Length: 143
Ligand code: FES
Image (cartoon, rainbow, N blue to C red; front, side, top):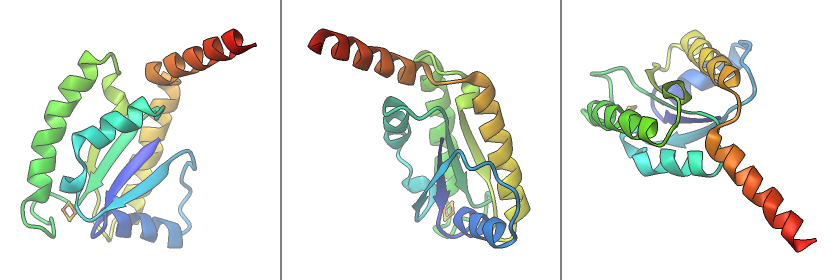
């Protein structure tokens, strides 16, 4: 599970969750970007293609983006991306966009734990299963 965090709020919230020693499910990796608007929808599609079971984007609360309106753009882009993901056959719960401030370590832990739990209930991504089948078939042919 990939969690994109903007540097100024969400990443600082993640840091706060860590230094506060809040219990967080460890089955995710953080990718830090300067702003949630830096997360090109293509990055998310690439993550799914590479086998991610879920992708989450965390940014500053609306109105608090350090680049003025970056997260408003993110919100519009991600709404469109959600429609695309459904067309690719991915369950809507495999993607989430949330806002976390630098002071919200507890919120970071809660949204990540909830997301990881939802994705775990869904099981492996269909893209990952396909890739594993292809790999197994290629191995069988080479033997
Ligand atoms: Fe955090 Fe833009 S800097 S969303």
